[in-house]
Image 1 (cartoon, rainbow, N blue to C red):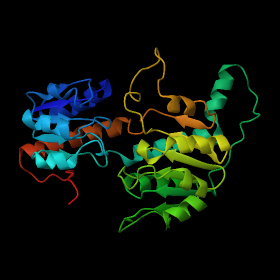
Image 2 (image 1 turned 90 degrees about the horizontal axis):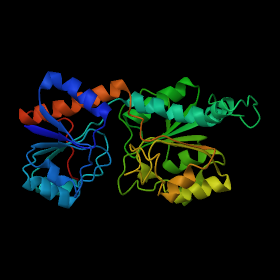
Image 3 (image 1 turned 180 degrees about the vertical axis):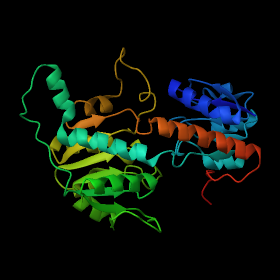
Image 4 (image 1 turned 45 degrees about the vertical axis):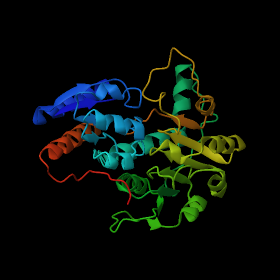
Length: 331
């Protein structure tokens, strides 16, 4: 089978080519995202491998089916960009990588969090300008704070373990709590978590039921000065409501590795052009907002795990073995 890898960067090519020594698949890399405009590039391929911001709607799925594509193997955990009902209707199998490295994303939560609460980004810029004063750089201890985890999957629990290491009290909310939990945490309702947590870290998938779960109403439920971290999916947050809460001073800090309108911006070099997204541009003006460009997954360990998982799913599909990472439309 021939495999078309879309939205590929150099780090993808390096990791996948290294892993492919074991599998020996026929792989071609495309810089383009897979969507309705670029779907003709899939001609002659049996498998497509899109990334998190590729859009495989019903039209694109139908075109893939006409081109003879039999498998969509996502190299990410999120699958909200794929119309699973259309894939099922056209007999196309869909797989993903559900847990490439929970620790990679969990550790990035604290890269964002510590930057915010200890203001190291501002201190770094001062030092470069020869300003060694400490005024305005007061932070707060994580030890003793109440840390809220929204979504107690593998990444959420990995984040909770790190928070426990800092001496935080852990609250967790999940509509389907894990049967076994090895982290000392208290499971509460979403509303209780929002009211009690000093720090809230989002680890929920993006579904219609979780879209804009952080909105004007839920933000108002949170403690004054709350710090909000999102390394999951950008659509979990209503950004306009977040900006309003930041302007009022109710939200004390925000760390974002994802953004609801990140497609066409994140992963791209726009340094020689104007940022056309006025909402994102406004976010970047707040001194208590830290934004990274969806890099929580970007460790050598995670990239290696992603590559092996994707190629193993393809190999299992070819050999008609059970697909542990298959995703299907809801009944």
